[in-house]
Picture 1 (cartoon, rainbow over the protein chains, first blue to last red):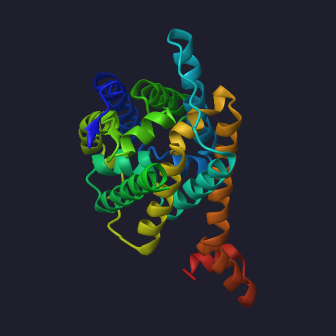
Picture 2 (cartoon, rainbow over the protein chains, first blue to last red):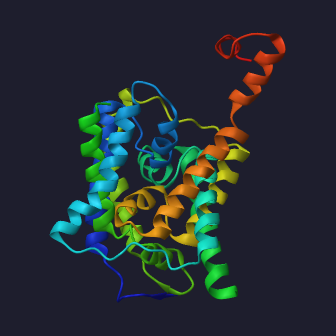
Picture 3 (cartoon, rainbow over the protein chains, first blue to last red):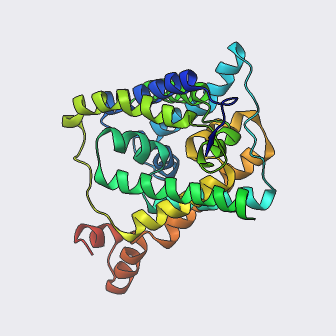
Length: 141
Length: 150
């Protein structure tokens, strides 16, 4: 293992993390809801009285990079993979996060913040699977 | 949840994602590539998020149901599938949605596939399907069947 010092941005990462944790924490405190992005997306198919609030949170998430881009130009967030991989990856992320009832935000941020055993298992499993996948794609194939 | 408040929460969360570098698939893959040139930045994102999240969630404990402790094959298997998709592309759900406004065709395609995967789970794994089947066979409404826990 070697550290990629050129791309290592600890302060921005820490500050971004604090904002992420604060947003999830405020939603829990004010609304008693877990900020899980995969759950909010799935919840768009549930027509209850919180539907508009879920849509609003997702709209905020989509608008945020536009606002940030006005102040500071952003690198284009494009994956460096082929179309087939994009589609298979998207399907796996959608299917997997719903089977596991959570993703990086719901299990990784909120679940670990509240010391949930279930979220620790989920986070360990998706981190290990992701690292193994990157290892196979980058170093074996 | 109030719509305006959740819009603000979504904005704050998204600004955090941008600042943290989580929106860039290349940076995510750089973090997951432990045996290559490793970029530890995203460990700092998690540390920052959980560091403040811990105190918020401790205060919010009375507002939330206690976390489930159920560890089942769906949790582990689903997480593994999610991890494979995440490692292949470098998008998890939040950053994928945040990439929509860039208008990049690959970002839009990923989000469409992700929503298709969500719908697939709702069709394949939904207990409602069994409920529906049960209700159909007994000639009852789905609401009645669900109320009796069938």
